[in-house]
Length: 338
Image 1 (cartoon, helix red, strand yellow):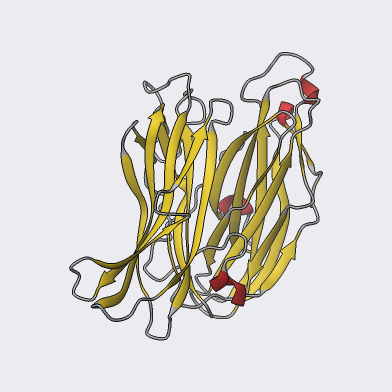
Image 2: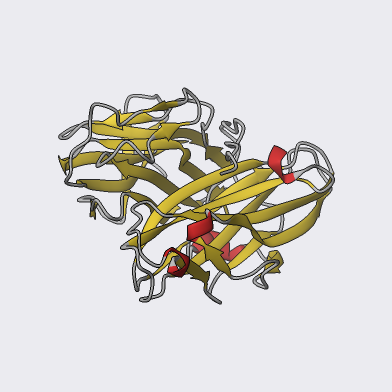
């Protein structure tokens, strides 16, 4: 299977954030390009380790460093008639200059096993920054395979891409938008009972900004097997020596902290979806998840509050197997209204 190239570094205190469904601060940004009509068959053949791009959008930038929010929906439909218990669904948003081969593009990546008879939708989002004015394009790439072949009716093992799927790119974002994404760094393990702050974005809001949209997404694998734990940076299977047959229960939340002007601590803390977080049981069959978090944040004034924020995804491995946090699909961002 073709190796997926990880996104190049885009860590900056002025890059961008995300939007999942209905994000208030993102509502001001119009969609400039949209595609939901497949450029190839909507059926991906797991028994042939099928891969390929299905949607494409093109756009023109006019300023150096211009940022666009790229949003996708991937509706994966696995027929009840497949012989295996599940097929794997891989997705990637890939963006770059229109005249460059897509294999050279930067990308955001995620994976999930989808069970027989199940329909599952993922909504990856990512900010593309154009280094210079010009013509660019983004692709929605999908891939599949058979994590646990049954040995029966191999040709029945497929998934279909539903009509709720799409790829879109917005008009230019506020130039002070911020994003933290470090796919060039090794992924890491999170042992049972341990917590970690992922992709901490330190971002300062301009004086004209009173509200912004924050997001944090985490790509996690439970170490129920060595397969699926290959780190593209170190070329090592990180779950080696850590596998258990049961899955992992993780608690995740997006934490947005507004710092005091004197740097002495926080004057306000915001949690999404809540302060207690959200528990997700990653069972052996599912194996991988991408968890999405979003919220609209209002600037607090007075009480010594400054304009700098720290935005992170807080992940705790509550119980079960060791978990793997993938750098190539874990990302945080902040986007002011335009």
